[in-house]
Amino acid sequence: MPHTLPIQPELLIRGLTLVSLGGLLLATGLRLEVAAVVAAIRSCRWSVVLPLNFIAVPLLACALARAFALPPEYAAGMLLLAAAPFAPVVPVFVKMARGDLALAAGLTAIFPLFAIFLTPLAFDAGFAALGGAATLRFSYLNLLTVLSCSVSMPLLAGMVLRFGLPGLASRLLRPLDVLAETAGAVSLAFVTWVESGTLLATGWKPLMAFILAGELSFCLGYVAGGPGSQGRRVIAFGTANRNIALAILIAVESFAGTQVAAVVVANGLALILLGLLHAVYYRRLAERGRLPVAVGRKRLP
Image (cartoon, rainbow, N blue to C red; front, top):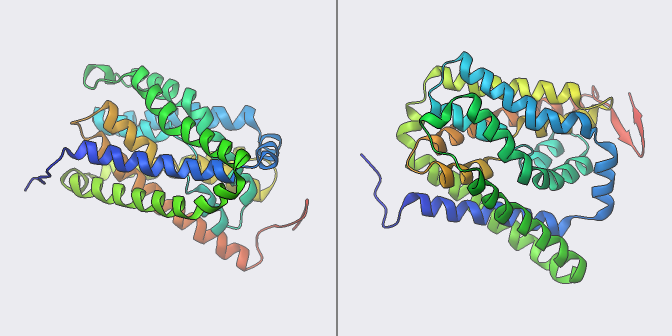
């Protein structure tokens, strides 16, 4: 039985997702310190991490979509997530996994700035490689506009507010966190409800492709994460856990009336589950003393 609402579902999804994504990034800007950004920039292997997230992972999604012969809408949903790295939930998973939380917070704050320009390029290239233009309509300019308004403006506004009015910025943090997290949860639940038919009809092939993409991305991130165990966990979680809110927003803006948003949700839920499993695994290893523990700048075996 189809769901009926007094307003178009796409408008409600768009509004909730904008509130969630904008609120999370505004809160990130309010927390952002120059020292944390500088430390993240200095410690990150950008020559490896950027190509990994904006070239290797989208290529992996394209390869899996072709290998499993996924329909265009499923392939587009996978590719959207693959082109949107470092979800806001990454610091949460890294904290659970006893990774380098400062690095995770710094990279999660910085990556949206790269996403403004590199996400459209990665998705456009992958979308063309999959031959999606014949069945779905995609607007590069529209995507760039959405990213600029929903990513760069809230992040920069938060940074400016922290610099100019630190007291107000501190008082706004908790309400913003609650608002953004609530809107994100409601948005995800609403999309799941609206697209329940598509989600339930997802077969084993798309699910297997989603899981393989998440696991292989995690392994790629861990291998490329550098010599330190804690830093490797940060890159692994950031590479495997993509920005679901951003991908949903792009899907609703560029592919309204298709199943792309439902595919993003199904894939995103699989990534969240995998992220939780990885976090629990590393947390238990740490509790048993089988992971390195950072002490200042030194690491104990």
